[in-house]
Length: 441
Image 1: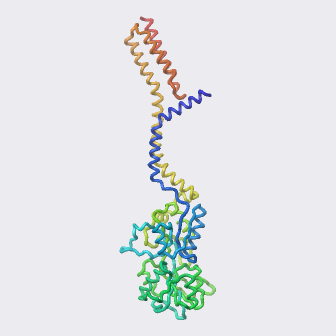
Image 2: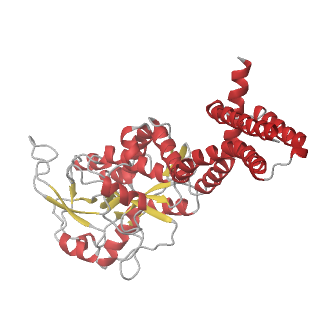
């Protein structure tokens, strides 16, 4: 048993003595490959939304529930709106934020700035701009609101910025008649008659929209100039709220309503881990991919507003869908496998050719021990055949004995022991030549 163990250790010693340079090269390849491996994604992200009664906040809560299934914590923070969300992203106070289309003005040439440090994951849904007003007379143009008290949203919100753009385009002064109020507060003021109109940007199922649609004496403006607005403001999309879509029995609304809508865009810092971007887009597809009053199934998410460059990870997602490994493996396992592939591919690219060479090197190393003895034996045989000197008989025998002793002491793996026995047979063969020469002398 001990002999077998020694033989095994001997083989391992020869193997390591032969292959140490292979392990060294592979180790260097590992170190170089590791420089290109993305770090593991963090387990926590922060998303900045809007008020707790708004659609941004509600959708973010749904994202958080979906991401929690993959062990990612999404902290939802409320804000005053899109402008504050942008500032938080730029100041590294959040990783993700909802931003209303048109809030970031494009420079000349309609090309998104590349150096903002922010990237878009695309548009998530339409945000219809509802203009609710009091009165029996139907209004279809913003100029009809001249001189009226209008709620245009809080300072820093996307609804306020859009309202000011549209009112300014209609030459309505941005003065004391504009009230910094939004959401359910604006709805209550409008119901009580303390204001005359309110700009509301929200999905059709938002509580504030549902309340105002069903409030007596409150009407919705149908934009007669919707095509002109879309030409003037490319980030706006013309939408139609079809007759009867909310309630077929009561035929509500009683006629088609033409609306304008920016899109709600999901913006991330450009250093957000690519795996988390892909996971976030999968959550967004689950939340926003269904059909609705204004969208077809599968229409969102999509890159509809070029106010910021599209993330490279989002571009791949829209072209090919979720990353291959994330389609079939749990998120953490897919990330681990993806990181390992980056490290192992270059290592295997080195190991495969090296391992093809290694057996030949190993074979040469073991045989070289035996071949050194053969070289000495060959010199001795030539000496006996061509330069035999009877006075040197003792020296000849000492050299043969030394070679025989050296051959018996050679440590080679078991698979190469035949070489040792063959060597000893050849030593005896030369010994017979010596005996023959001695007898002839």
